[in-house]
Image 1 (cartoon, rainbow, N blue to C red):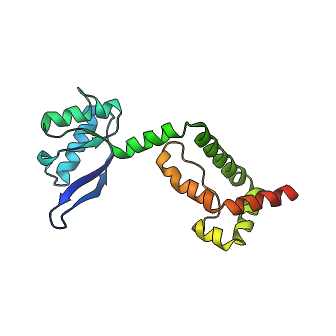
Image 2: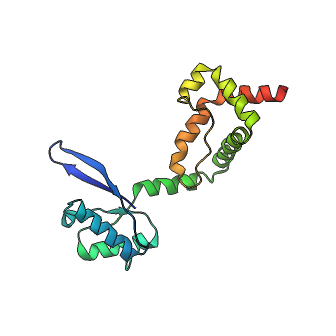
Image 3: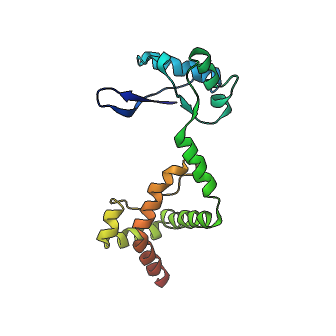
Length: 182
């Protein structure tokens, strides 16, 4: 479990969000996760009584109103109003949007092209040779030597993968043309 803290910094007069730690949970029940949550906040010397908007994903062990983490935290801190994690909301929105036919076709094409090059030594070598001759594309790809496969679970992480594809588009087309000639 990742623990992050969002708070108002009186010194800089701004809202900050800091990563606190990763912690291992003994189980995924609301009880186990909330105990780990509270123990780690106490260990980090966070005054949990002042907590107002804890954010969790929408899984029942987190959001459940009777035995979920949010319900257990509210028993201890009544003013802590559960907020569905914004990163998780974004991920869900992207998953939903990606089911649109045009987006789905585009994602499938990007994935198939990545597999085409990455799982054939001959095609990957051709891609790398073509990329070596395309300074602009290579720089935009941040000197990557191959295309990235699309992440199956973290849909928001696809932005970097799609950017790599876009930056290497001329290299992809030139490589495919060259492979077609041979």
